[in-house]
Length: 144
Image 1: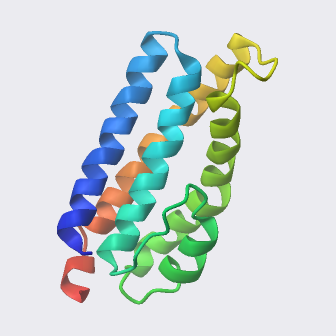
Image 2: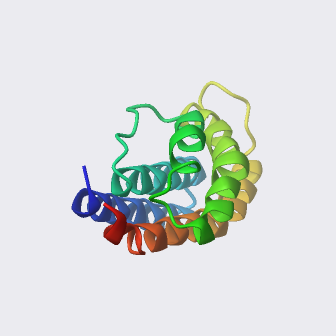
């Protein structure tokens, strides 16, 4: 655990964002949605790693972030509200979308609806990854 692994995780999250952007251009909206969720999940796990917290090996990390990251003295206060918003608002939406997007063949989902969701959450996902990147690159390095 530590900052180096966290920085690698941020790079991975950024690559998921690039995948989401590419899939939007290619009109593969289910993969764009899946990629947006993965980007935010991995970015939050990077924050956990940088704070010395072992992230769980599950997709739904809401409880773990709330109980470990938001209360950690190693995470700068100036980012905690943003992290709280990502954890309580954005991530739950992305997790719901991930379930739908991963199994579009099982659900009767209109392609236009998927497109709207993918477009809606791309900007928020990019911002969340950027916030997490800032946390990983911030004063947290001095606290470990």
